[in-house]
Length: 396
Image (cartoon, rainbow, N blue to C red; front, side):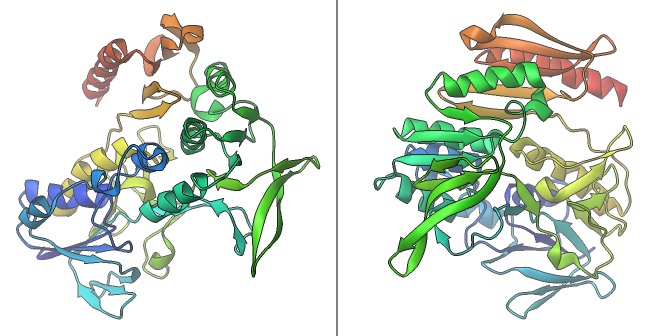
């Protein structure tokens, strides 16, 4: 293998380049990124950058010297538009073509948007640096009422930041409570209280029916949100935190299977041994036989080590074992998750109290602790997280 092309100048893409060098690859590496920026950290976009506590210069994941040491070619501000594995070629949006022996797909995705709102001003998502800068500009120039659609991790963080900026916030959630699919209803209720205790209006079991708008010069601007029950909520700004769509369109006709992400085996290898996928875009087969795709920082940081090892070997010699670690900062509270929280037999608060905003909860299955949730309790959480990791390592 003489040339490897990494498509996606993201955290997962950068870590893939680093792993290629760390694991001894001394050939040509080409990195293709559709954004004009070198790799940057996305979690601060909805928190520190949006709040004004960090600048863009604080987000870079590597400086120029570190980037130079990797001895890679960085093609930024250009998209990959077609993959032809048989010819060993990646075609770019500027007409250029890259002859390559291996491909790492680290394209992440685009934030989902409500349908039929393309020409309405005041509607935002937060996925890129430009998204966060544009939203902050609106929030700090006189916005009064903000409606956040979606109370998952990103929506909750945006609601918290808007509250920090002194704005009125309404948070909409389709489920019974926030994060119920991840944490369960009982712990989801704790997060619901975290919002309402800070004066954020939380409306659950709520669906958006449309966006109210009015003329604003030669454009139209949002004035509110219509709910499916007929209620209209006033809004100067609407932020959509309703998930992301994996960036896989460019793989059409390539032979790489996609289904809400790039389908991979347990080692992040596609049906083509010379093509692997990492990060938000990778949907890999788990030890339980189902498929999983993770949209969080830790996965993008950890997954490349396994994927690159298998890519260089030309076959799957190692399976990916996710740590399941996720963190979030909301209303001055540090939230941490590790392991598997889905479908537990038992959920028990083992230390502290949710009402005190300091606790640790164990998620158990078959008598074993398989997942941990903590709020403002990093010491015990870290100890239990290490125990989870040891158990996972011993069973692999």
